[in-house]
Image 1 (tube, helix red, strand yellow):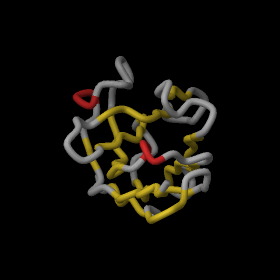
Image 2 (cartoon, rainbow, N blue to C red):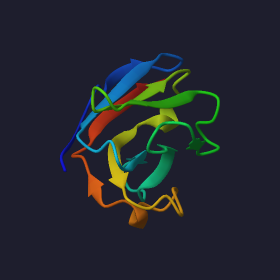
Image 3 (cartoon, one colour):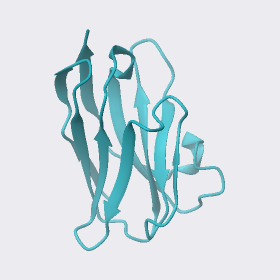
Image 4 (cartoon, rainbow, N blue to C red):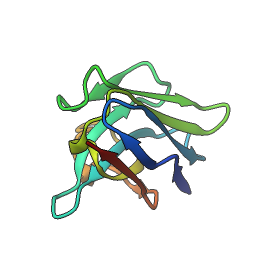
Length: 120
């Protein structure tokens, strides 16, 4: 299983970015996590195997949208209305069990991360 995240960059507050993750894991549920400097890795969003169920952290609900295209083996995270506090390295992850989608320990595979910087 290989995960490759991309799409990070520098954006002004209020702007948008779209992250992508090339993932050959159509049979896994998938998620995005992020880790800001000096902070622990935190859950952002997850999506079920066939994309019919999603779940978001309260901090991004209404601003971020997770989606997947299993035919293209791609996971995406559309981020709108970005805030400086969204600055972090974003990681895509894949897991077999979706019992606790917010827990990093429930994910079996991780991408290398892509840096998102939001300037004020």
